[in-house]
Image 1 (cartoon, helix red, strand yellow):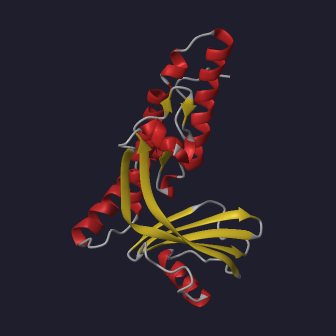
Image 2 (cartoon, helix red, strand yellow; image 1 turned 90 degrees about the horizontal axis):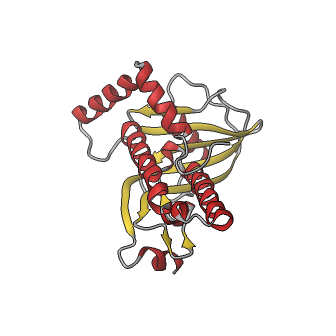
Image 3 (spheres, helix red, strand yellow; image 1 turned 45 degrees about the vertical axis):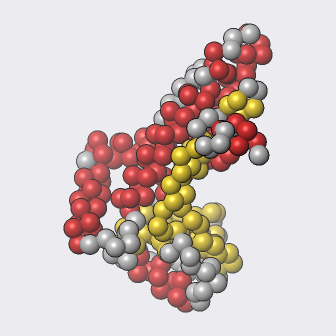
Length: 229
């Protein structure tokens, strides 16, 4: 109801993707020191950690997949096939879920004194790891705008909050879409699509400029509309 009040009848821009992530939490030490993003012939996989004894792993699946449809043996078989050359530390799976891919950006993030931030205003595919980054950025920019308004009587930052925040949001939407399209196997993709995708991936990892762009987008851009501290 609040978002509808702020954004109006048209709401915002929306995209749904033709795949999802099957995610598990398992009791096992990390399989690698760093995150593993894998683009395999069978689809995407991500190997990450949640602490010294817990791993979070994902693999690309159909959005309609039932989270209870796989045995643990089958889950590990799929994950091993998606990260060739990597030895996974396996352990009991104590959580599983299917994460659908959706993108949304509200047309407006402020109306009067009501402001939308974080997931209320925008969502991104998880591939680029931008969800929390964007939420924190919204709050930092809003904090500066409110400080200027309430302490200095200067309304320009608050009036421009939506435009300022959405510039960063759309950059993150592009980055998340780009990472997703480069690393996931799309339904119906042919050999040309697959080889072009691998060419794109190599153009990034083989180039210092390409690696720098990926690192900048992954860690986030300088905040606009907030004073440096």
